[in-house]
Image (tube, rainbow, N blue to C red; front, side, top):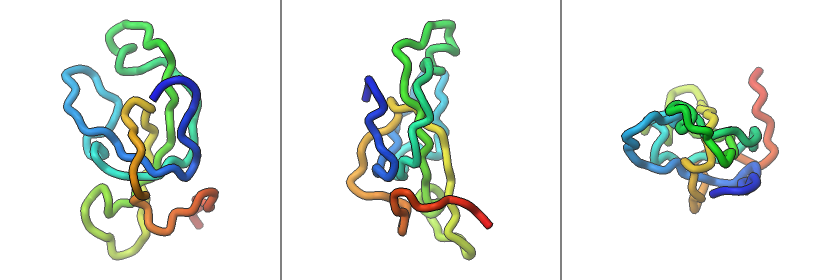
Length: 113
C-alpha cells in the first residue's frame, strides 16, 4: 500500500508475516494475526529506514489496529473481551477476508468504564 490513507475504520486487516534482517517496528507476536483498523494516525517517515540514517521517504500511513486477545494468544480469557491495540505502518498490513474481533462494529465506542 502506498499513497494516501487507504484503509478506513472498520476494515479487517492481517499483519504480514516475515523475518526482516533489519530493524523492525512491528511486534513479532502480531505477525500473521487479524485485526480491525480503528483509525489512520497520519503519515510519517518509515522508522525502519530512519534507524539506518536513511530519509524514510516517501512517508507511510500509520494505523491504529485492534486485535482480539484470543486471536493473538490463542485462547479466550475468563473475563473479557480483551483487546490489544497497536500502531502499525501500512507496509505491514494487508486486507483480510474477515475481522478477527468478534462483535466489532465500525464506530463502536472503545471507552472503558
